[in-house]
Amino acid sequence: MAKRRKLLLRRPKHTKTVNQVPGTMTYVGHKESSETKLEVIDYNADQYERYTSNSPDDAFNYVDEKSVTWFNIDGLNNIGEIEKLGDYYELHPLVMEDIVNTGQRPKIEEYQDYLFIVAKMLYHKDGEIENEHISMIVGKNYVITFQESDGDVFDPIRERLETSKGRIRGKGADYLMFALLDAIIDNYFLVIDDMSDRIELLEESLFTNRPSDDIVYEIQDLKRNILRIRRAVFPLREVISRLEKLENEIIDPHTGNYIRDLYDHIIQISENIEIYREMIWGLMDMYMTTISNKMNEVMKVLTIMASIFIPLTFIAGIYGMNFEYIPELQWKYSYFVLWGVMIIIFLLMLYYFKRKKWL
Image (cartoon, rainbow, N blue to C red; front, side, top):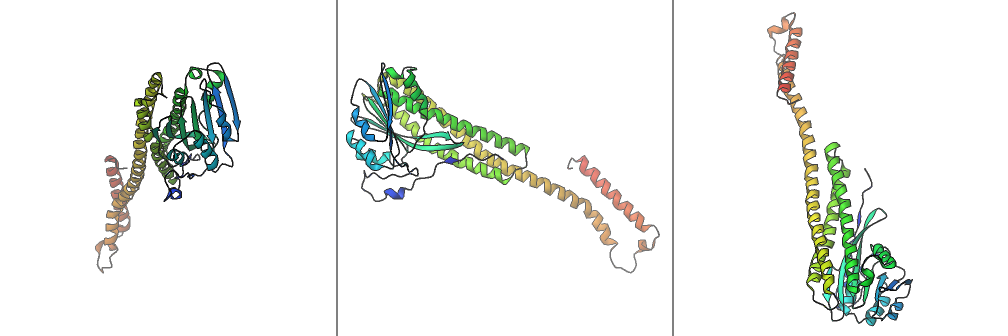
C-alpha cells in the first residue's frame, strides 16, 4: 500500500503559558526558526517594491499613506524581534500573546486602529499536509502577517502584485486582507479534495481486496486528520461571518461583496468536511462489515462440512460400538454397503445444500 500522507499537526503544549501574566509573550509551537525573516512588499497602482531582510526593524521605514505595505514575518520564536514590531505599531499585549501562541483558535478582534485575525493555513509540502498558525494585523494602509516558518500559500498573490494582474494593486489594505484569506481558504479545497481521493481509494480497496491492518491504520489516520482540519476550518467560518458584518473604516464597503463570496466558500468547505467525516466513519463500519462477512463465509463452510459429516459420524459411531452381537458385522458385504450408504448420504447432502444455494 502507498505511503500514507500524514497531517503534521502536533498539539502545542499549553503548559508553557500556565500561570503567566496575561499579555506575556511565550512561543507555543514546534517550529524553531534560527532567525526571524521579514518580507516587505510596498505597492500602489503605479509602483511596486519588494525585498527581504533579516531585521524586522526595516518595517519601521514605511509610513506612506499613498501606498499599501505588506509585511510578512517568518519565525515566531524570536520574541524580542516581534515585540519591537508590536511596540512600534502599538499592538495590544493580548494580541502579541496570541501571535506567538500557535494553539490559539481562529478568531477576529477589532481595535481602534487595526483588525487582528488568526487563522490556520493548510497546504501540501513534501508530499504531506502542513498545518501552520498565521496571524494578521490589518491597518489602514498596511497588513502584517506572522508565520511560524518559511513556506505558505501566498505565492499567487505575490505574483499578482508583481505583475499587476487583476485589481489588487488598485485596492487598499482591506482587499489585500481578503486576498490572503481567500488564498488560505482555496487551499482548504485542495486539502479536502486530496482527502476525498484517499477515501475513494479506501472504499475501492475494501470492496476489491482482502482487508488488512494497513487499511485500519489508514482509516484511523483519516479520522484524526478530518477532525483536526475541522478544528481549523469551523472557527474560521465565524471569523468570516463577523468580518462580513463588520462596520469599520478600514474595510471599504465594496470589499464587503468579496468577503461575502469568501463566506460562501468557507460554508461549502464546512459542508464537505461534514460529508467526508460521515464517509470516513462509514469506512470503518464498512471494514467491520467486510470482516464480519468473511468470518460468516468461513463459519458457513465449516457448518456445512460439520452438517455433512454428522450423519456419517453417527453411522460410524453405531458400527464402532463394542457389542458382542451386531448382525451386520458378520455379513460378507457389509463393509462395502456401509461405504455406499455413506457416499450416497454425502452426495445427497451436497445436492441439498447446492439447491438451497448455501454452497
